[in-house]
Image (cartoon, rainbow over all chains, first blue to last red; front, side, top):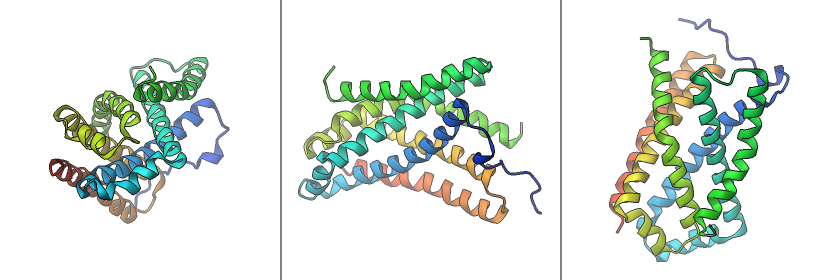
Length: 127
Length: 108
């Protein structure tokens, strides 16, 4: 049977707000994260090949490109975590006022960069 | 309870479980990603970090499969394409973590 349900209008139809930016970024980072987690699974699986075969991977991860990808991934995780907390709070019925949605949207965007720096510094034992 | 409500509840439960696991993994990933082979293997063979990582990938794939199927629902109109996309999505959400767990248990 043909499904008559309407599809979501494409995103360029709407005027952009902080909330729409956070919403579409939430979906994009969700897809980036699962692709990244798949690459992490491949990375972990390749460990069984032994120390000698790990050198090219180690060199890649120690290059500027590798570090950029790692930091980018930590940002994507950070954004997803903060945006998910915002979603959970809204699911409980809070934060729907226009001004509040703007403030929490900005908090997610700015907070994701701050959380990335914090996670990187803690992980690298700088803190 | 209809299917959409069940999916929404499962999505929310998995997101609550995934949040601390993702935070834990992000910190540890920052710590080990550019480490030596023995450091990385040491992390993934440690019983606590191995168990937490297994939970992390299981919940990450479960959560993502539900989330991405919502995107399919929103943007794919053709029912056959949507069905195939969902089957492929759920198949990969089972097979990728399963294979990774098998490799993890063969790591020493």
